[in-house]
Structure formats: structure tokens, C-alpha cells
Image (cartoon, rainbow over all chains, first blue to last red; front, top):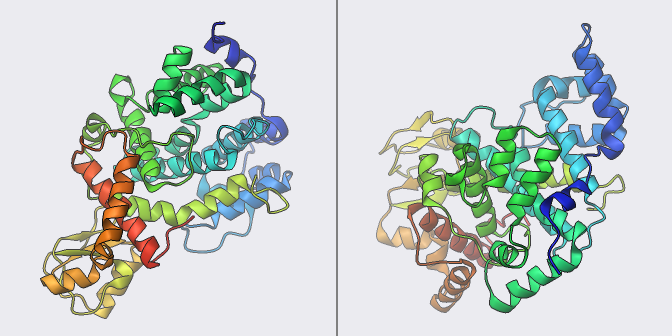
Length: 289
Length: 117
């Protein structure tokens, strides 16, 4: 038996916005309109009460740290920015898309907790390093291990084989993937995000998060790499890996990163992670997905 | 020199390094004798850890790792090392991350500033 090709797995997962489609379409339409205003944006978002609640929760949390309390969606749109809100909706739709993945190999709550923490840390690291558009790193961090979910959902029996080898020989999970499948979760994610027409830089950051120096977007990949290492070491959630994969000194050099800023970044992640989890993982009934 | 959390600062402590906020703005130069007001300012800027001058005894009293019984410290060190794929290839950044892992675990054991779940 040969493992499924990356293409075959990825083609089985078309880009779907699920329940978020109508809202995103309305936002896009409002953006096209010459009369586009913050209020029009707010109205489009408010048609989805669940999204509205989550947006206000995040906008009023330490993740943004605004000095005063925001109570209307139009205010939140104005301060958070429309690009960020579109990213948040896209991220929510990805979580939605994989909610059926079985929990037997990795708990989904643990997986998303890890992913959200890496997104949060990547954004903070980018801010600290004064990189342009630090918010985009949240999405890159959030999606860095999404290739694993594709494997679990599309080829459960192969995922099982990967985990057997990984547990038997106590090697890195990604090395087990390479030995069993001939490719790893980075390549699966790259193909998926490319198929979904995500920006090329984001695809690069995800595709090279274990070996940033191979990427043409080395800085972006290095941010996700360092954030992933940091969150693994702090033990916030897990994407299945029981070891902490090595930190690339080249990645640190690419960011001119020394040891000094790390404690501040970890403290800020601790400060923000609860609000981020609530915004992305909580259901209407208050339970965690 | 010891590094302590902003909420553990007390008036009269002396900074051993420059204190900057996350944007790199200087909040206190080296050798500042901290007043109550300055401490409030540092905390308001979200500064998390501060290097301050300390005698050896003070350093011991403030370091969560020094407060742990030696066998417990050895245990968490071994546990943290075992989680690394290659713990012998530590660069300066990895070494700091390892120190933070130990501190996090020590604070958890000593029930100081519990980190988020």
C-alpha cells in the first residue's frame, strides 16, 4: 500500500467558509461600495451575533489592550481594523472546517490551544522585532500545523502508522511522518493553503516553520519557528509532538534575536491567551470546543 | 544581579540594567534607585522582569529556583531536559528558554504567580 499523495488529500478539502460565508461576502460587498463606512461594516458583522460577541470579547481583552471599553461593533472595526477582522473570520472558518477530526491521536482542544498560543506569540514576537504588519503572524502561527489535521481527517490509518513509529522509536513526529509518508505536515499545509489562495508569504511561513533558512520568506518563517519552539517549551497545548524540536540558531540570527525579549513575550502570551481561547474556542453555550 | 517580576519590586531597589518598554523606550537607566512612583510607571508600561542589584543573600531569597529543595530542582531540571530533542545543542536563546521553563515549573511548585493553564 502506498500513502495518499498530498494533492489527493488536499483536494478533498475545498475552501469552505461554512457558516461564515454570508458575513464575509457582506463585508467584501460593503468594502466595494463607495459609501463604505465603519457603520456599514458594523452592520454587516452584527448580522452574526456569535461573531459579534467574539469580536467584542477579543477587542476588549489584553490582546489589543485598548484603554477604554468598546461597546459597539463599529468602534471595534475602527480600532481593530478590517483586515484583522477578515483574518479572524477566516481563522474561525478553518477551526469550523476541521471540527469533525477524531480526537484519538491528538485532542483538538489541545491542538488549537497550541496553535492559538503560537499565533499569539508570533504576533508578539513580530511586534517586538518591529516587523511590518505583525497581525498577519497570528494567522501564520495559528495555521502552522494545520497539515496534521488534514492527515488525521483524510488518511486516519496512515496517521495511525505515523504515531506507531513515533511512539515505538521515540523520534520527532515530523521525522516519523517523513519516514512513513515520504513528506511531512509542512508540505501538506503548504499545498492546502496554496489551494485556498492564501498569500504566498503566509504559505512560506507555514511551509518552512521547522527550517526557516530554506524559505524565500526567511524572516516570516523564522518568526513562526521561534514562536512554535517557545510555546512547545512553555507547554501550552500540544500538536502531538512530545519532544521540543530544536531551535534553529539561524532563525534567531535572521531576526537578530537575543535572549532578552523572551521573558516579556511569554508573560504577554500568558496575559492574552485566555481571551484568545475564549474568542476562538468557546461555543455559544460557553463550553470549549 | 537578580531578575525579579515587576510586581515584586520594592522602593529602594537599584536597577542593574536599563529598563525599556516593549517599544524600546528607556524607562529607567542603569543604577536608578526605584521610588514607589517609578515602580508604578514600570508596571503601567507592562514591564515584566527587571534586573536589580542584590547581595548574594538577597539573590537567593528572590530566586524561585533557589527556594526549591535541591532534590526538587534536580527533578524539574531532569524533566525539562528530557523534553528537549537535543538538549546538548543549546545556544544563548535556547539557554534562556530553558531557564524560563525551570522558572515556570518552580513557580508552579511554589505556587507563585501561577501561569495561565
